[in-house]
Image 1 (cartoon, each protein chain N blue to C red):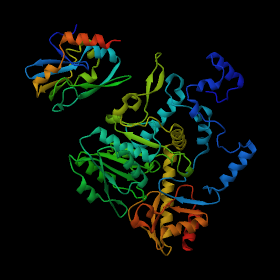
Image 2 (cartoon, helix red, strand yellow):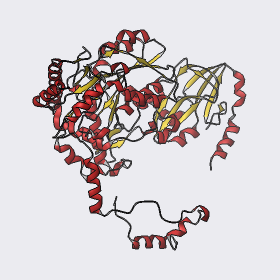
Image 3 (cartoon, chains in turn cyan, brown):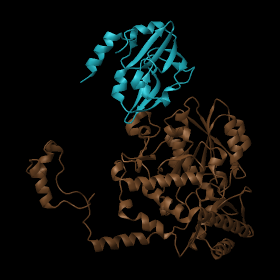
Image 4 (spheres, rainbow over the protein chains, first blue to last red):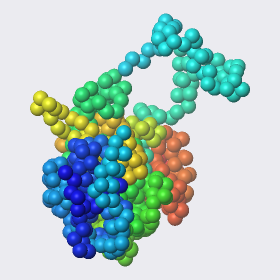
Length: 128
Length: 448
């Protein structure tokens, strides 16, 4: 079940807003379509990220995909145990599979993200 | 794969199968107006006898290094002995005509041989991981600079020793042209990189990498440990270009903390062949492996638990990573690298050391003897390995010309790349040159 309180991007990342901090990760849709994950590259604490721009990479046996930030700001925390425990993404991508925590520089950007209903519809149209 | 032409019958069957009456029909979509009509402007075909005669005529124009002449050529391509077993094994059809091992299940032999090559190169260089080879030393060098940039795009300046092979530096300039990196030349002093100059140019937060070659283009041995210290002091990557034979007696790059170590593999079992085909080797510290260019063969186990080999970390390569790949080269010199491998395992650790020691001793004997000939002297005082720069009273080009008429090859003339050294040429002495050969060279120089 996709959490109703989260916001979603068109590139299948999710955002959990807590005051001026946002937790970010990838959705079950992304995890399912990537399959066979082998590697994830996350930014270090202090890195500056921009909405819709890459903050890292995720690799499966066949492809390398950018991880795009749902908001702009500064990375204040990074899930350093995730790269060695990629199975967490298939088990709990909205919880323990979080990737970075961002201190927002422009909370107005949140209006560019989709809510659960919009995201569910978006996923349906993406399926051929 | 069969290399047999189709017969008329084969063609007829194929056309019938796809429901086409003739080959012409396959080109129907090409407008009549632009179709070529008539005969191609080619000379008449030769019979096998005529062709062989023609090729032999052409071949006679070559003065190949062999029993009738004496090769003391330096400059990155050397006349080392190639044991017969190298040709014997690599000429086997399974290796000679093998294609890229994309299908692991059908290519275990090829993959295993490349894995062994990678292992041998790591043992030789003291580095943690090697790829499956590059075109040549120059390409490997250029790729090393690009890799450094990919590892740390925030820094832009690469300090490059002017004593690195000029052609490697030219290739590097071409490859890095589209990137926002500056290649800053560090001059040499008395044959080796000017360390004081290097220290003054090396700046923390600015210097991306420091690159040098040892032995360098002049044959001189660089102060690797000192250069390594300079790199560590400004957090720059250390890129070393080294000679594989010399690694049997000189400190390998793994011992002076090189981040990337590359070089030309030609001295290991490859014919000089007017410049190629040869192969470049490329090694890195394991922590950088994901940004390493080229092919990488790994060891794994199959579904039945048997040891197997595969192409690995393929997501580095450009057919998957596309514009984000470190390199757009996704090939290797498998056959040449295999010659290198067979050479190394045939000689073994003891044998390669013997080769290196012979080169070292013979080159020094030659240098000492030539120094006693009026008009010639070593150009630099720095220690050298297998070759040295010889200063002449007359232009180097003249000396080369005169000697070549006597069947003795020295050079190249350093003036080709270093205007201030047009009176200097390189002399390399490999294990193949006898004392008599060297004495002949000395006498010949006396006659110049």
